Amino acid sequence: MADLAVPVVITIKEDAGSEPRLRINEIFFSLQGETSRIGLPTVFVRLTGCPLRCGYCDTAYAFHEGASQSLQQILDTVAGYRAHYVTVTGGEPLAQKDCLKLLTALCDANYSVSLETSGAIDISLVDPRVSRIVDIKTPGSGELDKNRWSNVDFLTRHDEVKFVLCDKAVYDWAVETIQLHRLTERCPVLLSPVHGLLNAKDLAEWILSDRLPARMQIQLHKYLWGEGPGH
Image (tube, rainbow, N blue to C red; front, side, top):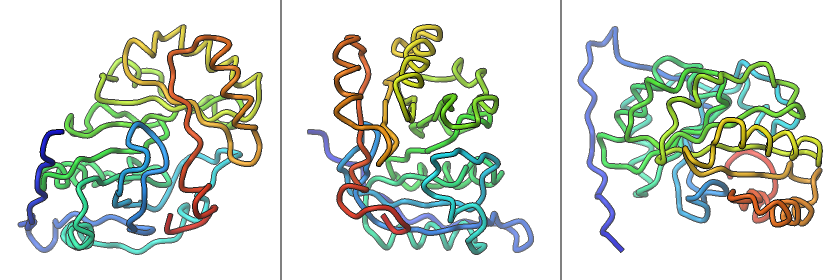
């Protein structure tokens, strides 16, 4: 296994009036519960705010709660955990324009960075070093019309697409969408049951029956610690 790059200390040099600031809901250290990085010790930077209201949202506390922090404050906090992996999440992190600067600064500091985004906002300007985890909103989310389908054209093998599923009808819709956009040819595809609503065993059996080349995930962090901030 190749050696991990060692994070470096970054000092942001900006004029006092132009220093990037973001509204942060929480920064915490936990195990990654989803994506191909599942199980890896990761620092999570959760930004406040989201323009969507998915029916199964499990981070509604991030819609409004949070405090403004400078980019340097965020980097200093992340560095304090002495971790290699960082995930920027929300809410919808890209709803804050300075999120792009945060992502680039984290990459410059030699972190392995992933971004969890709703797929409703343009991902083309995200630093190419970032692994973009794009959530495609299903009919079960109540936000189907918010999908920005042009984002599909920007996906690479470095990125991942996620479907959150609440029943068989939504699963069938996801399969059709995967085939229509040839998503498995573009990047890894993730299928996740809504925790406490869709039986994970049922989803596993559907995937196997369809020989679907996708990764099933069950939100490891919720099985370890339950729902709520900090994990």
